[in-house]
Each structure stands twice: as structure tokens, then as C-alpha cells.
Length: 365
Ligand code: G6P
Image 1 (cartoon, rainbow, N blue to C red):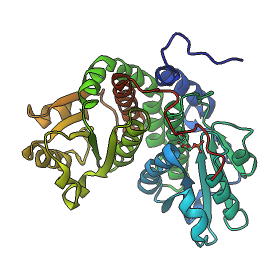
Image 2: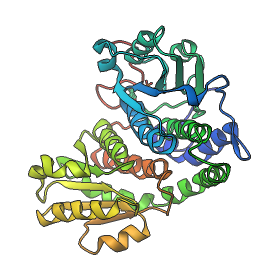
Image 3: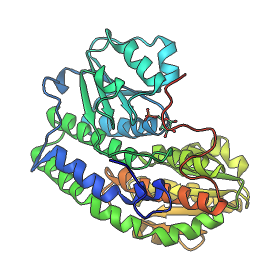
Image 4: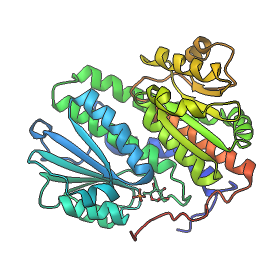
């Protein structure tokens, strides 16, 4: 079937807006009441010593997010790498290693080469893909489709949240199998996950506020994104989205690294986008924010109601998200990051769906 914009101005806008429905479908495909129906039969999570995850671009940031989940929830050591580095480094792959590749297209040359490098070395090769007939899917022992549907916009949006969804389900399955999460805790997580499409709708309802913030951010030459813990990979993804489609120079740092360099860049011309739900690390992030504001930096805080209250009145802009559990926050916070980049690009008049110099699928090195 021909894919059209379905009344939206851009494929990217359509694909952002589709996320509640797309995630519902993906959850329907993978959840049976209180169990996770991922086709990973024969994979014994108790016999795995380590997971190596490799990808490019947005898919790499999905891997980085998943590292926090696998380590914290399942106690499984994870290494994450960019495919173009991994493939030439000749990394040792000891037995007990499962290699996992994430790719929307399933055709990215570097990711495919990294997979082939692991072919006879890893215990098992898993891929998380959007295109089940792709090369990466075909060459894997287990291919897990993300069920995002065709993604046309060059800047990945719904594929990212669907990659996160499958990686989280896999991490939860590993946590349960490894005895780190009991039936009740797993069922609770899955219930929360079933509520995520509703939270996505609430996040999309913030579109007007986000567009206003984006108008101002679009005036900047440089933008800094900060996040801690699970929000650090999200900050990286937010900065990538912004530079891809609005051509504004954006960098992301782990909040704790602020004082080790990027704080030197802060002045009133550099908006600092802080992604921080009111979680266990929030207090530390507030003190990073104060360091920014003390130097005249303008903070745009993406948080929840409790976070907005604690952050106080000196924050330049607040984008308020619905409340969400700490583990699931990355899925939800992907949406304001996407919308911010989208509206900044609109404000700048750039070609949102076909940004200059970029390709949807990079099948050459
Ligand atoms: C390109 C696209 C990105 C994507 C990356 C990896 O750079 O523009 O949106 O994240 O490739 O693509 P893959 O298909 O492997 O996920």
C-alpha cells in the first residue's frame, strides 16, 4: 500500500502522532496477560554472562538506554558500541556472550558488518528490527520485530520508541528469568506499560507548549541537553534529533559531566534542555540546573508536576509531562524530545522529512 501523510504536513509529524496506536499494537503482539511473548525460545538468560549491543544513530541510543535496564533490572553486564567502531576494533567475544543488533532498516552497512564479525563468536545473535525481511533480520538467530510500521521520515521517531519497547520487554524477561523480579513485580511493570499509550496521548497534548518553547530555542546557535541515568541516552537522542532536522548545533552531556567541560560554554545565548522526571536522581539534577542558571544559562526543563514544583520559578521554560514510573520514563520522554526538534525545524523552515546530507538507510560505509 502507498504510504501518505494522512493529513499531516510531514511524515515526521504523522509518525510522532502515531506512537500511541503503534505502541498499543506492539504491546498486543508481545503481551499475554502477565507474561511476555517474545519469541526467544531456547535462550537461557541464566547461561548468559554478558550482552553486547551494537547499532548506529538513534538505534545506538536505544541500546544505551537498554544498558541501564539490563544492568539494573536483570543484573546482566552490557557493553554498547557504535557499529563503525566495533567492527574494526576486533573486540574479544568470550563464550557466554549474546550479541544484539538494533536497526530500523535492518540494512545499515556498519551494523551488518558488526553482526557478521560476531557470527561464529557469540553464543547467539539477536536483532531488533523494523523490517523482518531485512539482511540483519535474516542473518540473526532470533529477529525481534518492533512493529512500528513503515517509517518514512529520515529522523527516526516511532521506530525509536518501539525499539525501546522491545528492549525493555527483553530486559524484563531476563530480570524475571534470572530471579531478580518476581511474578507480581513483572505483572506490575506490564500493567504500567499497558498504560503507556495513554501517557503518550497526554504527552502529545503538550504540543502547543512544546511548540512555544521550540520557537525560542530555534533562535539559538548552540543548545545543550542534559540528563542523568536513563535520561542521559534520551538527552543524546534529543540532541541528535535537533541537529538532524533543524541544523542547530546541539550537544548532550550526562548532567554530572557538566562541571568537567561544558559548563564553560554556558551563557545567556545557550539554552540548556534538562530532561528530568522527579526520580531518585532529581535532586542532583536540580543542583546542576542551578549551576547553569547561576551563569545566566536559560533552562528548559522537561519534567513532571512534582519536578516542576521542586525546580522553582527561575526556570526559563517548563514542559510538563504526566507522571510515569522511573523505569518507563525513557519511552515517554522521547516524545517531547521529538516534538521540540520538529517545531524548531518548522520555525527554521528546514526540510523536516528530507534533511540535507542525511539518508534514511545507510547501506554504504
Ligand atoms: C541513518 C538514519 C538514522 C538511523 C541510522 C541507523 O543515519 O538517518 O535515523 O538512526 O541511520 O539506521 P538503522 O536503520 O540501522 O536503525
